[in-house]
Image (cartoon, rainbow, N blue to C red; front, side, top):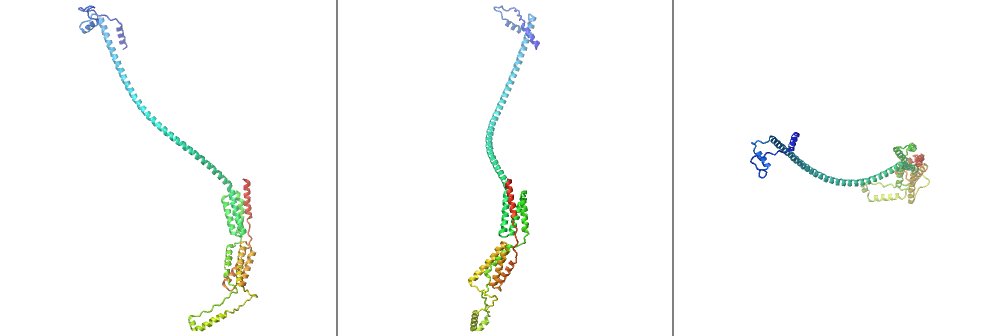
Length: 389
């Protein structure tokens, strides 16, 4: 291609040789022009050119022009194809860009919607977080209050337990001192010892030892059924009104005859029997071994029964207080009164005397141990606790 282009350039640089005028052509005034002459010369190929060099030069010039035209056509075709391809690619790029833009627009809209929703969720989360913070602060305050209360309870638990043990031991002491109820006092001490055993606190060891010694002393006492004796005395006091007095008249009931005998005796016989019965009741003869006659008026009989009942009630009080001397004295006086003023031949009187004899034979003068040692141990533990705190 480069050699051809150089040859075409050389041909273009050489001066064109004018062709000779043919015969019969006109001169400059009326002859045909050079272009016409050249056209006529090309239209007549059968005629040989006048100059061989000129013909060769003309052929080279025509070939170069064809090559130039072909090159231009090729270039134009390449440029057209490139332009068409470029337009096609540009159109495709524009379509793709428009599609991408639409996608981006939709993405942007969805993103904005998500952003709005996220903003709402964030705002709601912020509100919930604020509420949770307030609840957490409230829970922390409550936890602190509970912890302080627990610590206070832990500090005061020993004091409360000591106060409870002191109250139980005081009740046991009152049961022993006021009513001599050994069973109730023993039960109270056992309850106090069980509570101290459940707590298992080493600082209560001295109190537990004192309670254990008191429990052993109470268990070593002889068994005395105070409740049973008290019930028997109560029944005797309630049955005083049923005891017959010695001066009460116990008249024999007349024998009841069978109906057949009554009919046979007749009216007069019955009348005589009734009169004799009435006469027998006018005079009653009794044997009294005592030098004085225990005859009592009705009002005195009432006071006798009441005084006997009071003696039995005093014996109950002496029993509960473990006053053996007073207990035996009241029962002795009650026995003397029953024997002196009541009919000992009656069944109720005999049973009452037997009961009084059995009650008088019971020894109630056992000395009860005190539980002051346990009270001192409990109070000493309280004092040590206060000093330590």
